[in-house]
Amino acid sequence: MTWLPTRSLFWRAFLTFWGAMAAILVCGMVLTAAVAWLRFNSLDGLSPASLTRDAAQVAVTEGEPGLRRWVDAMDAHYSALKIYLLDDRDADILGRRLPARMRDWLAAYRASPDRLRETEYARADRIPERVSWWDPHLLALPDGTQRLLLFLPFDSSHWELLSLTPVALALLLFALAVTAPLCWALTRHVAGPVALLRQTTQALSAGNLAARTPAKVAARHDEIGLLARDFNAMAERLNALVGMREQLLHSIAHELRSPLARLQLALELARNKDERQAVQLDRIERECERLDALVGNTLRLARMGALPAPAEVRDLAGIVAAVAQDARYEAAGRGVRVDCDAPGPLPVRADACSLSSAIENVLRNAVRYNPDEGTVHVRLRPAGGLACLEIRDEGPGVPESELPALFEPFYRSASAKPGTGTGLGLSIAQAAVAAHRGRIHARNAAPHGLAVSIELPIAPGAAQS
Image (cartoon, rainbow, N blue to C red; front, top):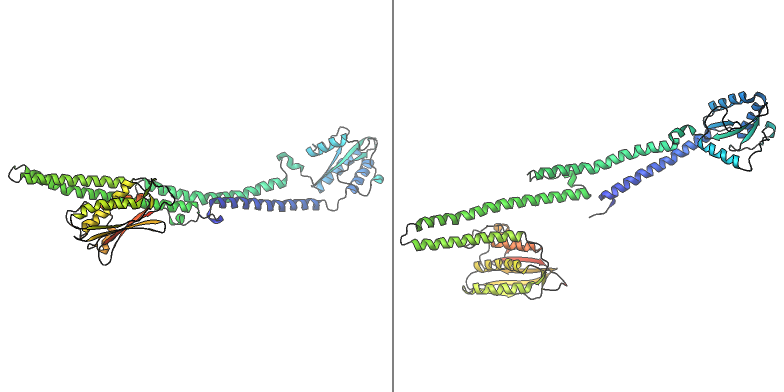
């Protein structure tokens, strides 16, 4: 699997998430800076010292009503600045509720030993040139009472009802605006192909063996594309298996029909009870044997197709030598020699019984088509991590056009001898070799003859059993 960022759903989701976070962070920083600049700019030209002097002058000349008007005028002109005048109960003279942070600050101020003495008050001629926005001042009224003057610059208390500041609310809205389309696009990027895969799976399960995932999904370079390609490969294999099963059933039906027809004919003739009855009974016996062999080989082919991967390690050279020795007995009657060259040991993971059967089917087939007094050559060699077994006869060979079909069930070459076998030997051999994670193929040898090669993976360093 390729783990490039553009080829993994993990990396796409990861980069999409952190890309959105980076965009939100950058925009949040810009928005915060812009709001801060606007707040500072809104108070440009205002001086807390001059405002305090103005308040002190208004308090002396106009009293509390004048202070009320002055605070209202300041609120109307400067939205980012709040001015509070508190009485001796720490209540605002305009009846406004103090912001939470102002109440906390006032409580700390009252508890501080450095706070202004109650007898002090601010007069215009006593206010210094430099005054902080956060310095409290006592203002004296004409009737002798005092009011505490507090400034709250850069105010956003009107947002406290929502428990949000303008910046936080703007960031939240921006985060929603950024993440919502990205999440939608990412969801469509994943859910869209998955929906198409689901539709294709439903079509396949409904019996449409030609169903395949769309090309745009299979062409993707990520896990979904890999899944789509694996699904198409599975569908191809399933289609081939179903087609092979149908062909096999058709072939079995055809192969069974011929001996059954001959059995019926022989049975009818045997009922005449004439001098040919013994001959017909012999024919019935032979046809029953052929049927038994056909059924047995068909069952063997089915078992080979379902054979699990073998785990035991065997010496392939010993298996080949034993099969060759048995074949010599059958070949000796026609004067055919079996020349076996199988140096060992060559360890392979194998089921001895099924692998011996596969090699025996190929070797008997070579002996059968080899001319009398000829030689069947058996060679076993290691090559590139594979154990390569070649069985070559000196017969007429097979037309090139028929080579690909040699391993199909019930296939018989046009040059096959009449009445020789059921056409399942090479199919059984192919199924057994495939179960051993190997491969088998045939070619015409020079100057004549057919060579069948079996290649099996060697199990290096494994203990033989």
